[in-house]
Image (cartoon, rainbow, N blue to C red; front, side):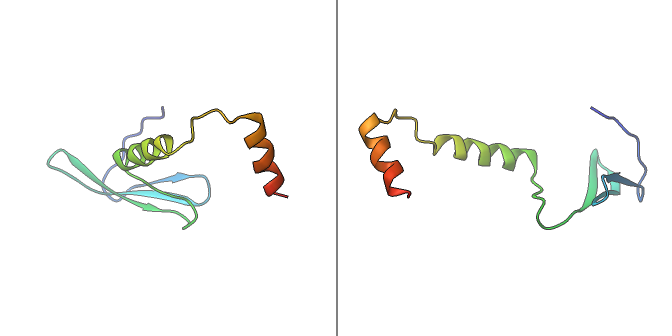
Length: 77
């Protein structure tokens, strides 16, 4: 993990397309602004964790029988 010290108003660049700006530091909190292309999703960690858990819970975990798998594959053609 890269650890940096920044003051309010200072920026950090990630690659050519992402800019993080420190907006304010007070009361034990840091406000940051993130500029990134729309196609790059940005999530708070707790939201990302919930999305991942929901995705894991929606996976089909049953084993497919060879006959059912064959019928499913034929239907995709």
